Length: 255
Image (cartoon, rainbow, N blue to C red):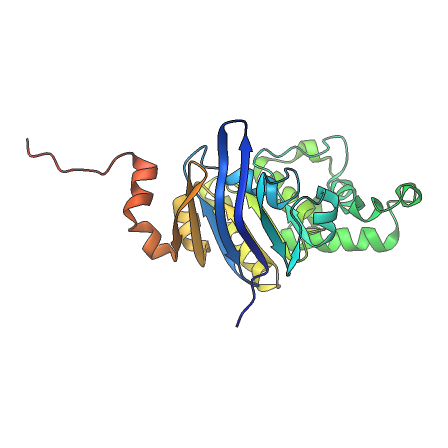
């Protein structure tokens, strides 16, 4: 029986009386692209914050490779092999593209006080960062200031920073937002290549064409609850999903 790479059970996060995430049960298997969809305010990014360690669950569990990770701080979650991007890209604008990836690699230094002061531009780490930049198509911009990159390349830089630690699971939070059609096509190809390299992907995406094209399975949230799970075809035809995105059931007027 195939074991999930990541599994949540009754995962919940409450902010006072608001149940932002309410008993979400989800499995993602090795080598899979799983979509986490839902209208604005459905709880998708809160789920990412729980999985990545930014938030602690109100209750429920998260298991990664069979080990509980709920409640661990973000640097320990990242050290386990989980990397994430953010909906709003905010690189260190005064640093080069290469230095931005090296800073993300700094996760390996958080284990002890002395390791923080170790040189952060060693040859091996520069080589590792350059390898990641080549994977995302940014090697030629390695020495350019990050603030000078257009949005399409900033999205790729965000993925590179996540990949330097996310060697097992990559969480992509609306990585296609704001991109032109040709940039979307290239980024789709990149994500497929990343998956083919052995990295499992969990993504949040509002572009339905992209989500339906990329994802093997989809989980849909609404008001913090899971309302549907399945392959893209079944999700497109699911009445509860249609209601969540478009309002009440569409009715043909007799007038």
